[in-house]
Length: 331
Image (cartoon, rainbow, N blue to C red; front, side, top):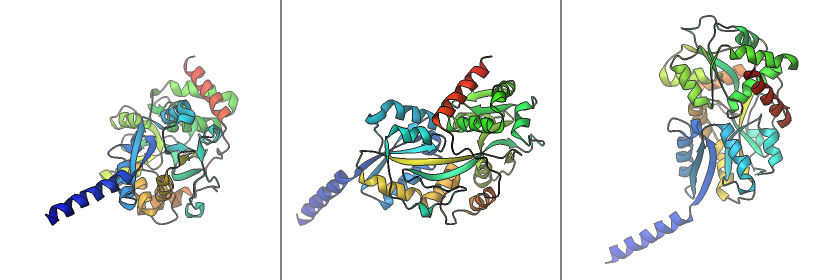
């Protein structure tokens, strides 16, 4: 009888602990939250460290689609944290007024540029690059202009209206070409573009199926194949004009008052989480600590690269450039 009473009390205590768990809703994109992405591993490790928090993802097919939902929901935004914005969405994201400062010590992160924004937290970064198979393309383009002009190359990239990666190409093209030549460059590229996909996952999958010679991604993508598949035949282009930087960001939603949100933001840049993000989101870690030999080496290499200054891109610039891209494709 005493055993039954003890069991009953224990059960009540467990229920009480369960009901006290606080839900943390994180908006993110599919390649992060998928079974093969970093998201599930981050969830498991975070909940182990903070058992009072129950992490839930709301998934979108791309970062661009996620950002469109954020705009639509506005002050009725259901997320506690948004994970997957990037530095080219920063201007518009700041002007929404939907996000609030975090308590993370920015001295613990390391980037190729100085970062002082206390609201939008970098959790990984990389350089945009086109990925190719060295066995199939022994003579890859050595510049962005060569890639645009070479009609023998089959290209896949992402829609800049829905994909942060596709938006990156748009920024890159506008950084390399004079404004009066951008429309012509898009038209020339369109002649040997196989498809413009909605998001990264589908376009990279099409490339792996052999549908194109090059696909727009990040310079970290070959590490995925090397580490996980033991394949060294994939490589990233290195363009003479220089590369542009993508920094992925997380931010707390204002007015949510979720105690777990601060725990998650700090955890996101811990060495434990950073290793999972590097290996399974296939991006460079922001942590100052050693994370994984391959990624540590590439991070050091990136520090020596020519990186174009595109950090002051504004919302108005992006809207103008998207309009130019759309008009170019229908001519």
